[in-house]
Length: 160
Image (cartoon, rainbow, N blue to C red; front, side, top):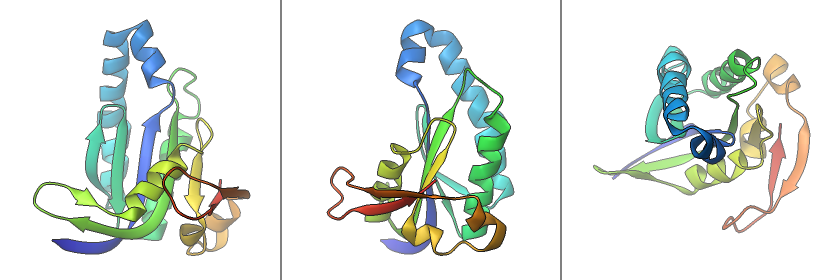
């Protein structure tokens, strides 16, 4: 098994289950388009690696704090005018452990839990990641308070 430190970004489409219930064919097409037109190109442009795709969600790793945050903010900005398709993003800096079949790590779990706390069309980052931000990037985030996240043994300070 290999391990590495990374900025872990988890993105998910807001209200996807409801979208699927209302119009499955259109919802699938929208998520495919979102992946091919926005998520994959933005990730690639910032050196991100899509670790896993889960229907309407993505787990992406970045080797740079600036690249990961810049990618997330660009994605959110690009989609900000789309009222029918919103994503929310959670991000953390932590270790990823990979074997031949999958990847693991408490950092992945924490990023996923923070994603659930992000507002629709917004982003929530951990304090660990926030502390790595400087200048204009840091200025775009506000303290959102401490969160008791499912199966995370300690409160996590979030910034949005």
